[in-house]
Amino acid sequence: MNRSDFLEKDIPMATVHYKICKLCLLRARKALKQGNLELAEKRMEDFNRSLNELKRLKAKKEQYDRMKALVKELNNQGVNIEKVARII
Image: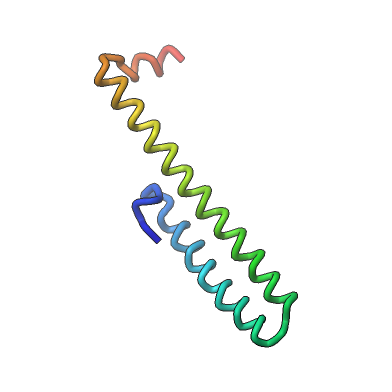
């Protein structure tokens, strides 16, 4: 997990989901070794839920970074974002 892929406030939640992903993979593998396909499938569903949450948190950071870059570019062009925000 690359911490820079997430907003600082989202890192604890991303860490939890990362650990869940690892644990689900281990449990799915164990279930497969035991021939329990249903349990393996359930663990993979859990894995996918946490993976989707990691993707959502990463996309949130990417959107934030794009917005930050846009604000910086507008400021460089002389647009006062604070005044624009008050108007809206």
